Length: 367
Ligand code: SF4
Image (cartoon, rainbow, N blue to C red; front, side, top):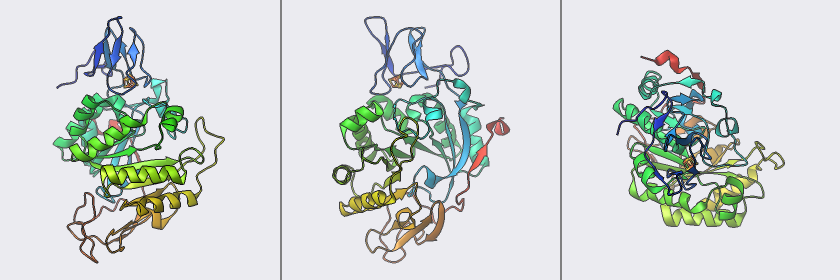
């Protein structure tokens, strides 16, 4: 379906909403189900009731573009070593007190959206910059669904893959449409208690678990998980035990898990940074429970950055932060030592982008 432009180029009609008997309109994109009077915006701030329908107000606008290593998303098993063109918009449908991108996600000023680009321009830029994929990141693509889908369709025409970096807080119908166009996803599993989800993010756990099961069992999207461990809130051994057992039982052993370090930010400045020992312990718990690929993140730990063969233990992909230090997969993505396949999407050789970060002005790629 073509995106319908309304009053201005950045305001477009959306598909998932319905009218309520009391005259309000309900957005059905995420389980917040915002019920909005004329002129009101939803919690995400970028969708609102405009003339009796829910519109997206940030179509084609971005908070900036950057070429990153794909490992930074983080994805360690999807085209390793390749560059990915990353962008986000503004707003978010969660309200995480620990947000590390709060200037974007909690922006109420659309002047953070400096860059404008059509889906075709983004796809062309990705191709011309030799990026294999585009990442919908910095804030959650769920809330700019229509734009993300149009970008992904334009990318697919040029052979560029799409990667969603998301909290997975999404309703069933839009989820089904959105993931038709995605090739990989890193989903934040922010904790494993309803209490944390409700008190700290203002969302619920179960819809996220539903998204994970959907992705693993009903799509071909490559899936990895990230949990930001916050001291005292979601880092107990018990919680990591339960979370990783759930992952193996419900998603299988091949979904990589990333345990990343919290740094004091946004509304949580009184909590210290996550000790490296907590990340290492969580990684070990995950592997003990059968997760084949578990990582530490946001800290320097070569062992926790690297990928190992789950069968013979050989180091398959060595990493030092985002620099690749070893590659021991054959052309079919199998361990060179024992021939066991490593789960993921690999090519006959890795990319060589390294740790570079390259800010990009999309205006230079307009037709
Ligand atoms: S996408 Fe935005 S407007 Fe829609 S229900 Fe979620 S928070 Fe509310």
